[in-house]
Image: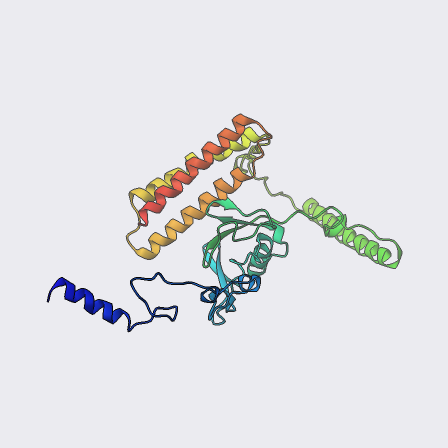
Amino acid sequence: MSMGGWGRSLSNLGGRFSSSLGRPWTSNAPPQVTDDDFSYITAEDLESPKRTYDPQDAPRQRRTDVGPDILVLKHRGVAYPMHFPGYSIDDGTLNNGALRERAALELAIDDPRRIKLLYKGRNLKDDHTRCVDEGLKLNSEILAVVSDPLEPTVDGESESGDEAPVQDGENGSAAGKRKRIRNKKKKGKKSAGATGGASSTTTAPAPPASSQPPPQPAVRKPTTPLEKLEDISSALHAQYVPMCQAFIASPPTEPAKLEFEHKRLSETLLAQVLLKLDGVETEGNPELRQRRKDLVRETQAVLASIDEVMH
C-alpha cells in the first residue's frame, strides 16, 4: 500500500471517533472550546475537599492489652520491680518525686527524702523532673541509696533510769517515787558491797592496765570541699580501683558469680564515689569544680572498664 493510501484510510477513520468535547475530530479544523467544557472550583471546595478516606481523620486507638510500665529498683543486691500505669513514662506523667515515693514504699522507708536514686551514674534529685527527660524507659534499672535517719532532737529522745525527766502533777510524783526507789536499791547494793568488802580479808586484784586497749584517736571528718574531694579520691584509689583491677585481671568463671561481682562493684562506685562527689559543693571555685569533674570522669572510666569484662 502506498503512503497516499495510508493517509486516506486514517482520514476516513478519524471521522468515526469523537473527541472528549463531544464533536467529531477533523484534521483540518482546530477544536472549538467553550465555557461548558470547564468546571470551576469554588471556595467551599477549597475549604472542604471531597475525599473518600483521610487517614488523619481516623481516630487514634491505643492498645489496651499492654501491661504496666516496669522499672527495676536495685538496693543492696536485691531487685524490686516497680509497676506504674502503662505509658506513664512515655507520656511524661511519671516524675522523680513519684518514683522516689514508690521506692520508699518498696523499701519500707518512712521518709522518701532519705532515698537517693541513681540512673547511669546520674542523681535523680529533682522531684519535678519527668522520668522520660532523665532517659528512663521500660525495665530501666535504678540504684537506690538510703541514708541514715535524722537524729531525734533532745526533746524527742527517750531517756530512762536516773536521767528520766520529772513531770509535774500525779505522773511526776509517781516518776519521782520510782526514781527514789531505784536510787535506794542502788545505795543498798553499794552498802552491801562495802560491808562484804570490809568483812573479807582479801580484795580482788585490779586488772592490769596493759589489758585495757588504748583509746583510739578520733578521726577528723573532712569539712571543706577540698578535704571532701581529697577524701573521696583517696578512697577511690586505695580501695575501689584495686578491687576493680583484681576483677578485670581474674573475673569469676561462673556466670552467676561474674554478674554478682560486676553489680557489686558498679553499685559501690556509684554510691561511694559518684554520689558523694555529687554532694560536694564547689562554691563557684573553678579549681574545685575541675577537680570534681576529673574524679567523675576517672570513676566513669573505671565503670566502663569493668563493663567490658561482661561483653
